[in-house]
Length: 216
Image (cartoon, rainbow, N blue to C red; front, side, top):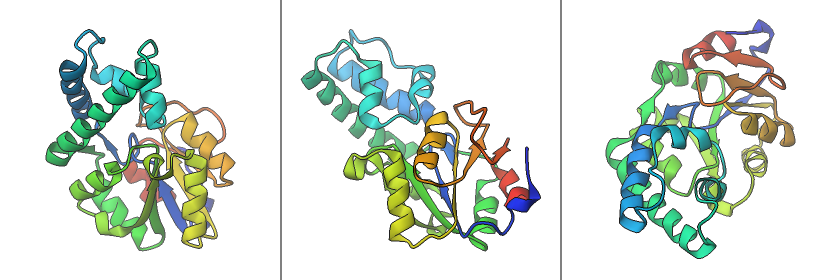
């Protein structure tokens, strides 16, 4: 952990990214999308966990533009819709892998901060995470790409405005998270155990979720 004890008592709230920060669902997402692929177009390159990890954090529309750049828009949108439903159905049943220490750390943080989630996922995804999360009630609100189709920075701003946050901090695992936090005017903490690499533009780095107890 690259920590600065001066970060304690500087914030009134924490906004979390979801994938790569609170849990890793890439294994079951890959299973869901592969099932959809075989139903819609088995000539498409197989969708592996590695391919899912490579696009995690992107806006949902962009994900399928990257995965299927040569497919015509109408068919790609159909494929995306089938994948989205398969994903929600699969995760509703099996969930994802919560990062170690999440339950006790969230309980600790909730005693000091207001907690929220902002993700680039489709509608229903955060709710699915919360249904598998033993500390779901500690999160006071959430926003995602699927709600309004707007960039993550705007969703962060919405959470800040809607909940009257005065000193929030955003925690995520990619350069996209860092850039979104910066555009929203919110400091950024990098979760290095996730899917990305962030060299600059962070106020701290955590190498495991539980390190937040010492940092904040």
